[in-house]
Amino acid sequence: MKELEAQGYRIVSGGHVIEDVYEITDQRTDKVIWRGEGYEGYEAAWKDNYYSYDRLIEDHLDVDYPNPTDIPHDIAEAIQEWVEMNMEEAKTWLASMRS
Picture (cartoon, rainbow, N blue to C red):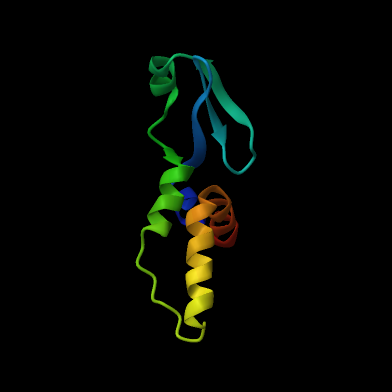
């Protein structure tokens, strides 16, 4: 996150909230920086310097990390299974490690 912020990006999350309501939230402060109705308004509110938090996490999750040799195979499989079953929690944890 720090690298992207140093390049001038603001890390945000957002999207559909309820019914036809959309919002954009600053990932650092958890402050809603835009809320409105309709996807068109959401697209119009999205600025060029916004970087999607979900994209940031997915970029890191998609990397082929080397398989640690000092972790027993069964434990590595259990961790992988947990990540796949708890993707949102895994994303949050990974983001906290990268901050």
